[in-house]
Length: 115
Image (cartoon, rainbow, N blue to C red; front, side):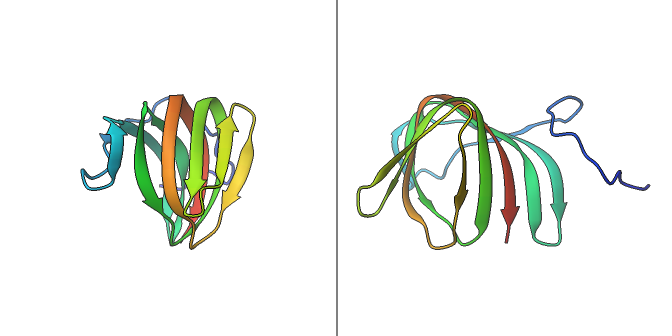
């Protein structure tokens, strides 16, 4: 089977995977993560990800590009610097970032991860 060289970023026709952050990472709530994977190949991962309300610890060993479609989240680094993420925002998380991710309103994002 050949893969198209242009791939539309959509949830249509993709069976999502659902999980939760591990219990030791959860700070508040019961966040549920739903992922629609589009690409998983040679250290490159892309797709759509949605999370419900809650707060958990994060630590990044990889690069991630993100575009927020809907919702409101706040990422806070280890120094206490907050970054609010809302619909229309895009950003890059670099390896070494650590802190927390808090979903204020269910958040849907596109992501591209390079590990």
